[in-house]
Image (cartoon, rainbow, N blue to C red; front, side):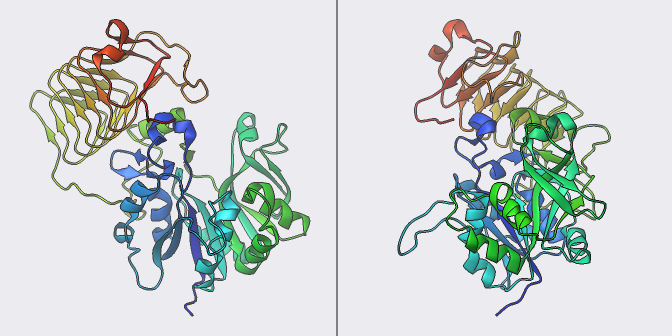
Length: 424
C-alpha cells in the first residue's frame, strides 16, 4: 500500500446558484476567472505549491467542463502514477445509486479512495474560493497542537459574521465554541471551509454519522467531534481570500485584479497559479484600439476600446466598440460600435453591431432579486444578442435571442430573457 502523509479532497460539485445564468450549464468551480483561469485553479495550485501531490476532486453538478479542464492534471504537475489528481463523481453501487447529499457525505462515499493512500492527515477544501495558502504551514500548526481537527479561519466584519460558521477560541487557539451561521455571532472569526483532519478521527466521525441526512462538516461533523471533546484548533489566516459566490463578489474580485497594485497578485514567481491553456498565440491590439487598466487574454483581437475590464482568451472586440468595467469570457465575439458597461458576458457569446448593454437606471430584478442585485448585465454562455438592441442594468439573458425578444428594441432594467430549456 502507498502511504501519503496528507492527501487533499477538493469539493467541486456545487452549482453556485447565486451566480445565476453563469452556472446554468457549468459548475461554479469551472467558471472563468481573471481572464485565463477557472476558479478551481486556485485551490489546485495551492496544493501543488504546498507539496501535496494527491488530490481527489469531487464533482457532481454539470461536471463536463470541470472534467475536461482538469484532465489528467498536467498543468498542475498532478499527472502522476503514484497519487496525482483523480476526479471522483458519484457512482452507482451494487445496492443503490446515491448523489452526494452534503459535504461530509461526499467525503464518506469516497472512503475507499482515501484508504488507498493510508494517509495520516486529510485536507478538505472547497473548489470555489480565490486565495493563496500554504497548506504545509497549516499542517505544521496542526501537528504542533496535537490537534484532531484544524479549521482555517479568518476575521470578517462582525456584521457579515452571520453568513459563516463562526469559531470562538481560547488563548491557545483551541476552539471552545462553534456556531453555524448564527443570528448573533459570538466572534468574528469565520471558518473558511478548509479543514485538516487526523485520518482516524475523520474516518470514525464519517462512519458514525453515515446515516445523517445531508451530512455536512459545519453542521454535523465538527459539532459531533466538539461534543466528544476532540482537540479542535483554529489556524488564523490573514491573507487575501474571496468567496466569489455572488455576482457582486465575482465581479469585484475580477476588478480587483486590474488595480494598479492589485491586492491579489496572479503573477508571483514563487507561488504560481497554474491552469490549462489551449491558446498560445499572442493578443492583437489594432493601431486605433485603446486598452487601459485591463487584462487581455491570449489570442484576443481588440479593434475598439477597453477600459477597466478583464477580457479572456480568443475574444474579438470590433471597431468603434467600447467595453468598460466588464468581464468578457473567452471566445466572445463583440461586433462593431457596441457599448458594454458593467457586463459579465460568458463564453462563446455573440453580440451584434451597435448593441448597447448596461444603459439607463438601476431597477430591481423581477426575475430573481436575490441573485441579480448588483447593477450588472449578466449574459450566459452560448447566447446571441442581436444588433441594435438596448439592454438595461441589473438584467439577465440566456440563450439565442432575436430582435423580437426586445420590445421596441429594449430590455428594460431588472428584466430578463431566459430561453426555453435554459435553467437558473
